[in-house]
View 1 (tube, rainbow, N blue to C red):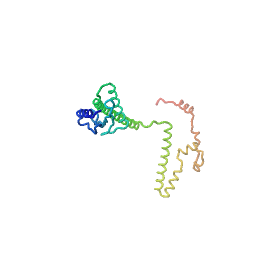
View 2: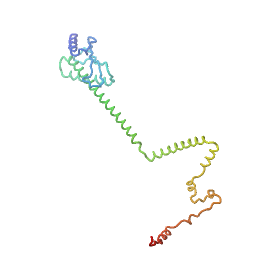
View 3: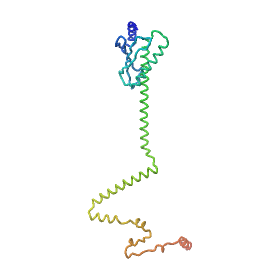
View 4: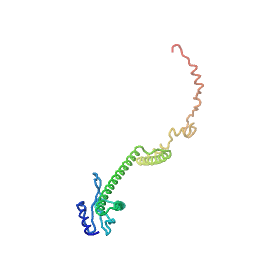
Length: 247
């Protein structure tokens, strides 16, 4: 490709991209590109498309590369953009049109802007989806706190064992503190009282109160059976009840 042809193409491109295009050498140009029609709040991406004209241009595709001017792009995203440009321009070259130079570069920039716009929208949608997922998980976590954990036999037994152990420890500590606050005499009396069995404990130990050690010396035992009446005897007494006229 002659220098005159390149100079002519550069002049036309400069009129199309007055602020975006810069010539870095006789065979190299750079055109800044960014997404079209960005929505409010969307983060932009700005690239510099570097075009190196080879000897076979315009019959063959020029060498292409990027410089990231604003925003962040992964290597996979950059490679995807570059491959997309090559595919589009190759399809133009396959139409058999002549003098594809100017049309080729113009198509490169237009396609790059469109792809950048798609990339920004995809990122925005992905960000929204992530935020919605975070919100959903937060709501579920809050609802789980309100509902509580379902109780099973196993979980209740585990809780009861732990609860009883904690309660025993608390009681032991409270007992220890209580004893510390007593005088030796009070402490001895307290332990003596605590060692006595309650009425219920006495009853459960010997329901018939047959343990002689629990009966005071000189006490009189009572045969409760003498005071028991059968249901038949009670019914018989009721049948013999009479009422006088005065009643």
